[in-house]
Every structure is written in structure tokens, then in C-alpha cells.
Image 1 (tube, rainbow, N blue to C red):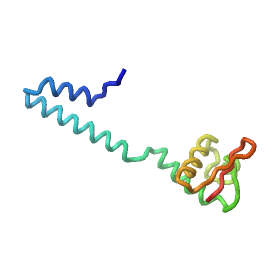
Image 2: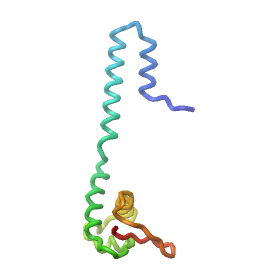
Image 3: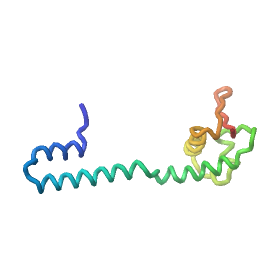
Image 4: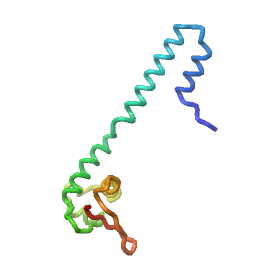
Length: 116
């Protein structure tokens, strides 16, 4: 079953009241507002994404060339990461992996990250 969106409902209402200009104008305005709201949401990063980007830069600058790190080693060696959960640090390092700044290798089931 397909989910009916707010936009779909407005379009359906618009077709029902097509002969009432004032209602059509109101519905068009509501559709505009809905599109603006959706566009602004997709363009700006969330608060946590912005914060994680800051930490990603700190982690990248703290890593030495040619040295491999586990997530736990990064947590212990980078002071700004103290108190953060292992999962959050993993997300930060994976963001670096995604943009090609860090390489991931696995040895005996343990993940190691190194600066590229």
C-alpha cells in the first residue's frame, strides 16, 4: 500500500475545488510552503552531522601517516574524543572513509584505519 503524502492530499483537494478560485489559490500557497519546507530540510546538514564533521577533521589531523589505528586507539590518543561512545567515533571515522581520506584494513576480524 502506497503512503499518501500531504502533497497528494492537497492536489486531490485542488482538483475537487477547481471551480473555486480562492480555495485553489489557498491550496497552491500551501503547496509552495510545503515545497520550501522540504527543500530547506534536504539542503542543510543536521546539528550532529555538522559536529561530527568538526571531529572528523580533528581525527584526521591527529592521525600519523603510515600508522594504523583501531577505533579504541583513536579514542585514547585524541583528547577531544574522550567520553564519546565507540559507535560515535566509528561513525566519524567512517565519514572520513567515505570521502577517501582514510583507508580501512581488516586483520583477524579487527578493523584498522590509516591516513591516506
